[in-house]
Length: 65
Image (cartoon, rainbow, N blue to C red):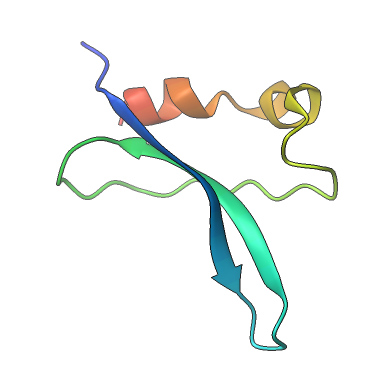
């Protein structure tokens, strides 16, 4: 199976109903198809790869659909 190109969107605002704005990094296949979603939430800084990539590899997952 060939891997797909991955579109990465950094620091996408996600407003909460109490007015707080959380920021997300979104990794998805770069095409118009619909795919399932994997959501990872951590209480740590999302920019520290040792925490985020310790559990999942978003580029690999998105590239495989």
